[in-house]
Length: 302
Image (cartoon, one colour):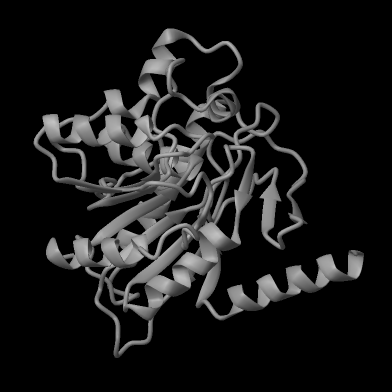
């Protein structure tokens, strides 16, 4: 069993080596961090998926398409894991490689897992990392052959909460931004996302891990992203299964409804079945949500 785990981790490392680079998000000190040992750990699930826990040193893994295919568009990918762990493969590198096949650059954000032992304010740690990722990709867009106004963000499950937080809280920088780099994603793709922290439809595990066991009503409101939408929120494509019994489909429905009420372009695709956490492929349907997303990106000129 131990040999199998080592082999699968080696395979994952091999996949990552095909990307251009893995870079630290912060070249000096990590903001909002409490000094301590790096206790990051990885495990392989029974279905051979790589999960990472206790992330305190965030990174950005760069996947660039072949130059002859490159469109100049980029997507920053936030895998899920309930703000407890990080689904590195099926919601991360696997998705990045698929985007590369279509000419879109992809950046997998390994964001910090909220933890009172490693952060002074754990609720802003992941958002700091998302804003920093957007900042880096925009600053280095020319170097990577990107259009700085065609940079989107994609999130799965709790990663969808992080992505939607980046898309609704961009007016308030929680990182240093002396050059006033635009921290607003140009578009969002949210796949079975955690959106709300309300008692009625919120995912309580993600809520507790990010804002604590007994959060104030103010914090619940602030991180219920369906309540934070304005006319400046980026256009969004949402994907969800109606039978999701982990993150209720109402999360996506309410977010989509709020976008439209604020006259923001929004599209949603709902699978009849599929549950939660299907990644790139919903085995209950022939419809590939990524194909729909690519059509949407092209239609909108990104």
